[in-house]
Length: 635
Image 1 (cartoon, rainbow, N blue to C red):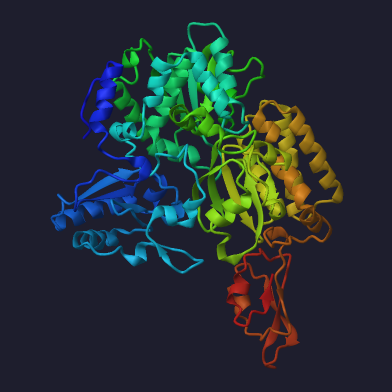
Image 2: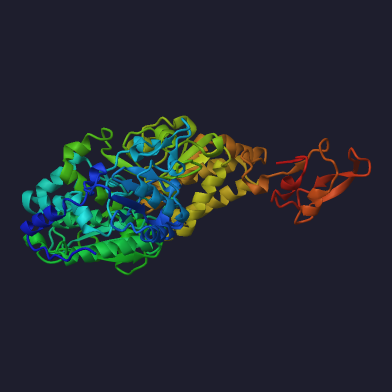
């Protein structure tokens, strides 16, 4: 239980920071632990919880009690380590042992192993598939080697509910500088030198947005954190909120002071209950110690922060639609200008930044703008967090310097493609992003390069596809999502995307024409040029990029009525090879729709007859192929 301390002045905070400094030096992964004592840091955030981390936590508590080891072993509940594919994860200090895929039944033997002082349990260590050797330290695992943590710097290191842990990692030192050491202009200049661009999609310069808002006269302004994160497969913001909520609160307080706002709102999707819980507890703790509310640290600055639930509408990721939702109206974008920095929430000047953008700000203020600017590329500074998912061996959160080639992310960090398959494409930027072919894997990832090849950075989703994925079907999937999530306000998005989806559906069902390919391209470009908001304008990207890089697949669907990847069921054809068929009739008996019948052609056994599939009745379920003992049925 954290001790209660009312912080009223800067001096009080400095004393508080000194009093807890011994707790951990998290940046180097070491702890001030008495000799013979061990700390078990357990990830208990969303991904690991789905894999049983809560049961594991109970098992550790029981094992420590059963072995009477309360004075020798301590459990610390931490945030996300990022290596979601290998959860639940347990890290042992001071040895720095990194255990993966730990199960409740492993708890007792881990405890006994530590009490006996034996070497780490080999079967719980990461196995390097390239060398065949087990790795005991986190930094030596290939998944982590090429990463650089800035936005995720505290994730997996601090207890998200502990203000003391956060303060040990330079927490609130950035706010101190903003309140006492720098002018508002100096704070904005720091962001300008750092070159931080918004991590929510468009990459707009953060300093410029803040500077515009600061310059608009008015006695009431707002700061908003966009934590809606509606992209399929994206979980970057969720992880930061679950693992390091105080960094968001500190950054929003800095933003409020810089632009002259005394109120902030975190707009978080209601489907993130653990993120909401961690933010709620952190906000309450910040109020308790005087880091939110009236006269923060004796500076005379007042700032209040609240949480607003989103209902899961994808369009509310667009800042003007988000503001409408916060106001209690239907979440629909509005025409810009004026921009929210000029006229936003309740008609007042408002800045909207996403979770990852805010998470970078304390680092920049503490470590220096030049330090941040030295990372990345000429026009895209710093790092970017990606949610690496799809047909990849190492699913998880990765943070890499801007300019890192896609190939390094996929193979060096992601561990390559599942089941030894060939990579076909990488989709970045969520439903509004494009599909990047394998031939462009050496492209350095930054805002401008991704735009140049027909994709976008977006919030950071990165979906990997292999040779079994049909790119026409992928485009159809994302258009289906976009049509479902369109607010319907503007005709290009409401009607145009519906027409795109209808054409794609015809093509995947074998009814498309070559003229349809031209229609897809021309209509997609019209939507890009005329839709009201950024989400509508970028919605044709999956179609246009797949047309550009995988046109041959579209042509095969149209001219040959064939899906090269065998993914479009309407175009799939199961056939029985008469030279292999033994006439056993197993396929006929197993077929759920009676699409298989006996011919009058004798099999090798003259008493048995070869079977044939009626394509008009077949539902392409594959049951026949699975049950053929001689593999005579193929797709």
